[in-house]
Length: 202
Image 1: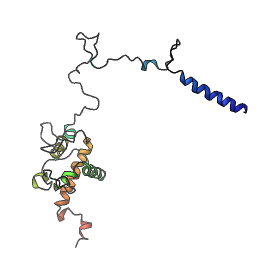
Image 2: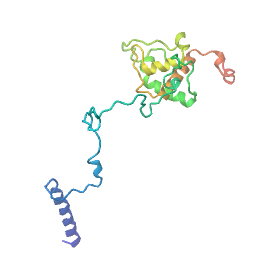
Image 3: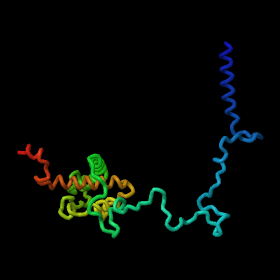
Image 4: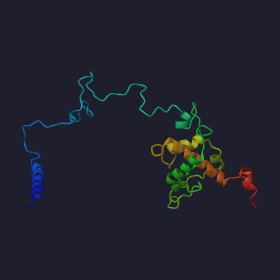
């Protein structure tokens, strides 16, 4: 047997047998590279506190406390409402082609099963016996405020669930924009067609 083979075997044997010593008692102090991760100065849930008079470590937030990222002062954007509680007439965001495409994708995920691809209220679950929603194309919904549609997405209505936790605010407005596009597509007038396209119609 060659010398390098012997050395290799000895190294392997050392590694194997050193692993067997795991868990055996030792008088040596363990080495902690970052000991503050072992003993953290913090309160566990429901742990007694020696600092506060009521001995409660779980404190009520001070009045007016707002969680990080939750300072939603713009009512029109975050709730679709004016300061007096009425719904905003027009959405408070700029409509772009990219936004409409995003709204289409979100609509297809969350809305199509009930409302259908055109918004007529004949999605796949309706064919399975689910209660049909109203068509987007009735006059009442075509003339309703944008904020109302946003509020329905956020909070739900009747058998429609709330999507406030599933769909971010920006995506909710994108869906509103796409719903308006669907309404225009099913109720378009000749005057809505650009002149350069209108000339090609027969």
